[in-house]
Image (tube, rainbow, N blue to C red; front, side, top):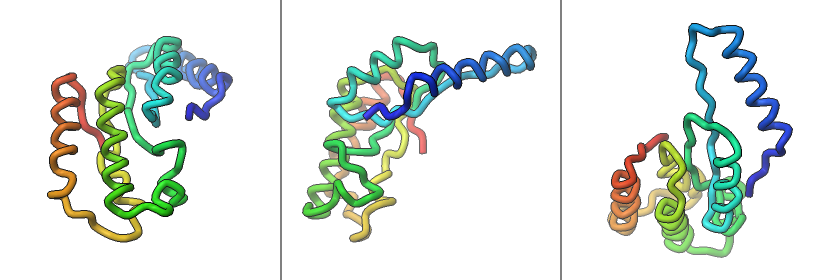
Length: 143
C-alpha cells in the first residue's frame, strides 16, 4: 500500500530543489523505494508518472497486504508456502512493473523467517526466473 501522503512528496522535492540551488556544483538526484505488490502497481505507476524520479528501488515488503516483520504473512503458513509465495509475488511484480532501477531485498524474507534457512534448491528455479526477467529488462539488483 502506498503509505506516504502527498505532502511528504512535496516536502521531499522542495528540499531537493533547495539543496540543488544551494549546491549548484553537486548533482543531487531524487529517488524512492517502492514497496510494491501486484495489486498496488497502478498506484505506484501513477506516483511514478507524477514525479521526476532519478532512481527507484523496487521491493516486496508485503504479500496480500500482510507484513513480514510482524509475522502476519507467515502466520498459519508452512515455511514452503510463505517463502515460495514471497518469491512468486516478486516474480509477478517484476513481470508486470518496469519503472524501477534496481530490485531490492531479493532475500528480505530470510530476515523474518523464524524457522531458519529454506533450501535454495527448492526456490532456485523461481529466483532464476526473477533474475532473468530483471536482467532482460536492463535493471539492477540491490541489497
